[in-house]
Amino acid sequence: MEKNTVQVQIFDMEYSLKSDSDEAYVRSLAQFVDEKIRQLWQSTSVKSQTKVAVLAALNIADELFQLMKKYHVLKNQLEQYEQKSKELNQSIDSKLSELSELTM
Image (cartoon, rainbow, N blue to C red; front, side):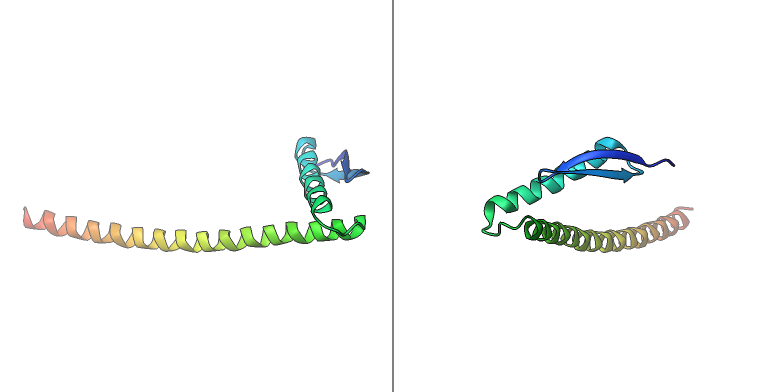
């Protein structure tokens, strides 16, 4: 697959990004990062662009880790529900089989 080159602007800096993803997706990522950096720039006394970019990256990483943690909790819950559902279905099948034998 050929990589696309996409020109984006993040915090007033131009970047040429090569990606397998489509242009709209890459632009949305760049816009997301730009917004996070700008929000932090406005809300903090740190005025080093590099430091603000690193802090924004840490905030984004924190969001990712929190979402991954929630994902794993939900995945485990789903697996438990699937197991319980399987057990209930087996119990229902067993009871139906018993009922069928009684009515014959």
